[in-house]
Length: 343
Image (cartoon, rainbow, N blue to C red):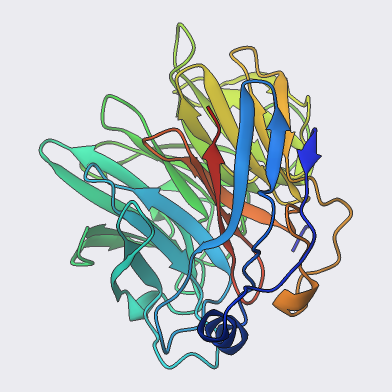
């Protein structure tokens, strides 16, 4: 797979206190007891709190891939599950203070990737992209499956479903949704609100309208006319399409290996696999880049080697409803970091 502005990074010291130290050493997590780690500058300053979310006792995160938050503030984390974990649940649920509530989704072990949430009427649903089963699965918030679908035969792009590995889902206001075949053949598939196939566009390449790993996608409603923003990761760019699949333009400023998006008012949040989290303004110009750890070769290393305030491989990130940011990283032992907005 492909792989800050101003900051204050504290001295690295272990948690003070016998009980706390024992917990930290047993879990592999490190807690820092001196100065806060502040990332960013100006109006965009955040306290960096690594491992703000951790797995429950007996569970070991695998790659932490997707995050979502529902209308009640509950946070959902999708991870692949470490092979040494006693639990095979791939979706963990937390309250908005980061307290573990429950887990489920053992069917997604090894394949939990994109995790996108949409409110439909009075109910909210999760759309899971399972890269192992090569399916998109829609569930209720408790994990109850509503439907699941594999490669769209109607597209004419796949033979027996081969070459299809969905990575994320985006939603339009009219009910349509878009699936990015990021790890497969770089197509984007559009469906209506009932799950009926509408069209396919994109496909592998670097020319306008072509894609190389459409890893994440989001309907950008900051614009006068909503457009589909695609994290065209392999081409190191964001590519915009009309909602009917026509190429509109590229955005490359500040982009390395963009993975996905989250919107809050005029800002767009972009987790970037190449060791940084970028915030773009209304014109898609970087206003701040947070936790820049490039170059990073720490994937696969123990937590003791992780550098406070520096990201390794941000894979998904979202604005929480209070304005804080949550970042999930592609590391085999997982890491979920809170960036707490400073006032």
